[in-house]
Length: 86
Image (cartoon, rainbow, N blue to C red):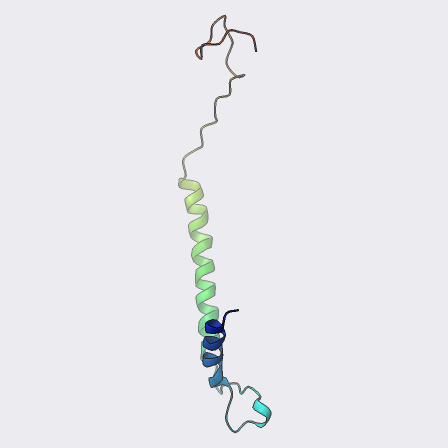
């Protein structure tokens, strides 16, 4: 982890430490509303993915099977300019 990232994490997390708390123990907020909001957002994203995923799969056109050289009959002279031998 580089120094800038470490300092950013330290600055953001420093609000969790109360100045009057013994031993620098993190203090949890009295009303952690953000946890419920985060769970609702994550559940909404999963619901969107569960809806959009099958819809995209249904609307996707069928993939054409690639034509291999061995699938068509080999005449004396085939369309690629080779003879019937390999």
